[in-house]
Length: 335
Ligand code: SF4
Ligand code: MG
Image (tube, rainbow, N blue to C red):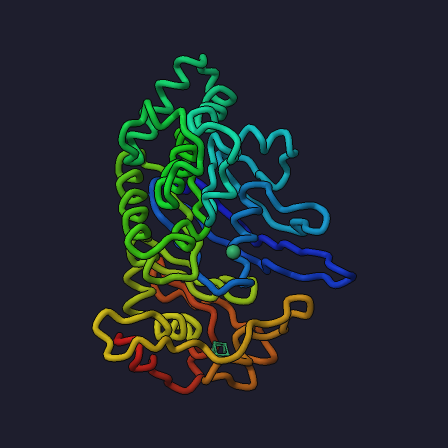
């Protein structure tokens, strides 16, 4: 599998009321052809900002990419103008957001909204675009596509609206689909249906997916690889199996412990105590140190380097230093 996207040492800053918030700090990862990579973390961890940077959607001001590279198809998207990015967005790289209602125009028929991208990026005639739009509705599992093209968003249920949003994102056969909390606004049964749909579509189209979520249940359903973000950094990355069965970072342990268990006697969620770091004054050491039950002095003073645990897993934690005490993962995560 080749790299489709390669992000190198990305830094994104927002200047808000005189403070410099370092939302993304030295993030590097790659996305392979046809895979699903999940970026997991709490809100404020930098996962959405990372995805917006890839799309060229960091509002400037107050935001800017202060350094780093985003290689797609051999070019660095960081150097692209807004005009160049418009040609990529919706065509090569598409995005679906959490709330399907805000992603759709309430005053425009569904058909017209799907056709827009087809006419703009693929030079289809109106009739061709209409035929393709009906095919797309069918692909995302909406019955009676010809009739439904003439309806407005409010005539669709929440789950059906998210299907329409996915159809729009897929219209131009993107190489990459970025899904930011795609099921968070939906109820549990509909969530499962949308995840099934995304998995199906990936099989059929081969689109690579970057899945942004705080929900490890969603990750387990869809991803092959996982990057765990905390305090603007990737703290651990690995295959789905490595992250779920051999996690090495205490923050990953915390996330796994707070995941609802299928057979648990209690439905109480174990939240990780404490709050994320203030990124207008980021800690010089490990960002998780104030909340980490295993923090040592070195953690507060120095950011740990990545330790490579396998060809696919690497973790930034001082516990992996040979001089550190041996610490086992908590029993709550069942690994
Ligand atoms: Fe905890 Fe230290 Fe590891 Fe950070 S580096 S996660 S504070 S043990
Ligand atoms: Mg977000």
